[in-house]
Length: 144
Image (cartoon, rainbow, N blue to C red; front, side, top):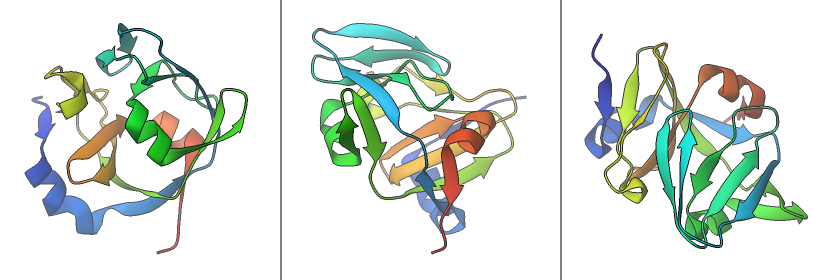
């Protein structure tokens, strides 16, 4: 089966069908002191100095990068290296494999599992992948 490439135009088409969700777990993250590559379960991610590496995700998969500027917009510190997600995000369930090519990953694609997963949409140009299993452990639906 071919994987669907999720693009900005795809996101615009499905926005009205996405559900509003809130992250329910805290994360543990460390600020990167130098550029690095990280092998997440979705693929190779590039971390730059000042970005954050998530090392614990409330029992869900960790080992992924969040850009420094985005991290400070999305997370508030609640303890030493512990952070809680602010606000809500849109989630769209995809029951087939898909991939994204995030602008922050220098053209390197990230892939869902063969079962698909959730597309987490921060805005039309910023979205990422969350497996079904990780989504169930770390997000809950919010009444709109």
